[in-house]
Length: 173
Image 1 (cartoon, rainbow, N blue to C red):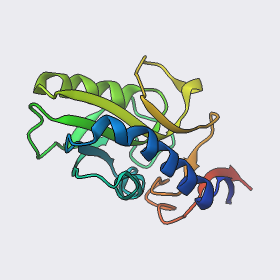
Image 2: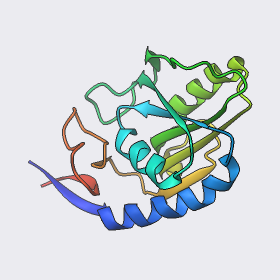
Image 3: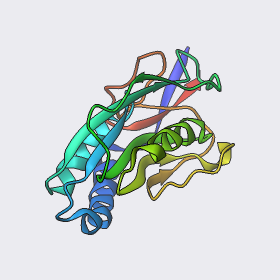
Image 4: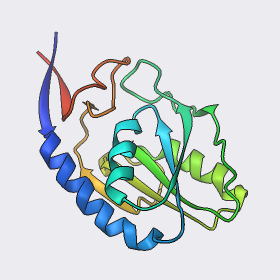
């Protein structure tokens, strides 16, 4: 039986997103940035961040797969859904739920590098640097987390737990 332990409450998340928005907003004022959410885990974070930024922006999504229903990445990344908006000349802010090994982000950044964006930056709600296998730059980080499997606030385990308002650790009971 699996249990859950809260590591970041909904209130902590709201406060951190407001601070991130204050940090990010000046970089994109008057630039109509494209927030590029990495599905499915980032959708809640992206929605809250977009509202907190309170500037004109556009939203698009990519869906990449590497986990399936497992708690470990397969090591193979695939595009399940590519960007629909043209990126040429755009200021792109990739919105991630979590960066751990860096494998998915490295794949995405490599793909986007050939599409002539004016700039590409990354914001991630969570960063798990202890698991980093590939050097990737995360420009804005909500929280650094230890090497534990987290769910909630859009993140899942086998499609469960996305609805939780907090970020939680899945623990064996």
